[in-house]
Image 1 (tube, protein in one colour):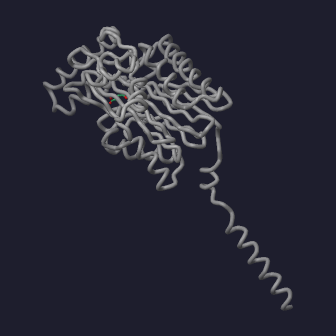
Image 2 (cartoon, rainbow, N blue to C red):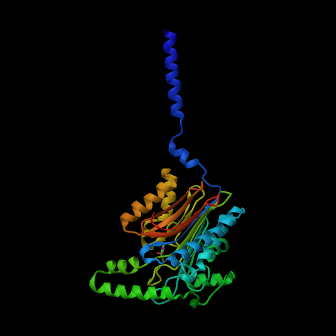
Image 3 (spheres, protein in one colour):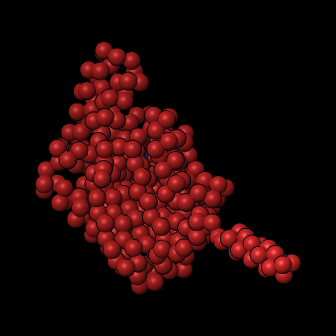
Length: 352
Ligand code: ASP
């Protein structure tokens, strides 16, 4: 009898131990490698409604997103770095008038174009950024140059242009950034803001005219290469009708862009003032680092909970060290695309 009791007790004890040793679901989720390399991009978030979009425009956006992401994907597939993939992918979008970055940058209140960009390397935590540049063809290239060839992280205005010239980057006449569509958008925003200012308070007027009427359109890219290095970059013309040298979140490390090989890479798009105050990109990484959240949980909390509660609009694309990817936004739409190591391409515009 004593023998039977000890066998039963032993069996209980043994079973108890094995169940106790079972890894929790969460830790399985965080260590599982989804992709050896991967890339994710956005072309801006905002009031992008199907009813306001022509079929031709929709195709043009989707084709350009696909062309851009394939450039980066090919670099990664051939063993290239995430830095190179982010640069070349963003340059395709900067050269297109469709996006509010480079060629298609929005206009300031004074009728000029002032461009912002930033880049971060997740391996070294090195970063580079530029703000308010008026004559540099590829602001993302300049941001990377600031990181690699200067002792600084952020340059602005005339000084940033001088540095670009000294580094042999392509300088263009400010008229290069003129597009009729963006110029018309400025007139529209100005008109509607003026009208609204007469009837309501300043903040409401700014919101209605600039934000609601705006399609945003910043571009961003996050890539993970075969060596496990994450890089992130963002490039923008900022917000239509901006004044007084306004600078948004896009060139601010931790708000518009962040990358850390231990956690993830993030590129943001939306109402910059709120993204700065929320430290959106860094907060996602921090939630993963300090709270062991998954990429999906962290992006969801920051965009759908924290940013939304504050009143901010926009979204992010993010990619973690295991190749998991996340699109998260609280606007009507976000131009976006992703590609995994199998070459699976996803291109979307509207909410699901
Ligand atoms: N975040 C950008 C800014 O505030 C705008 C955008 O994403 O479209 O400058």
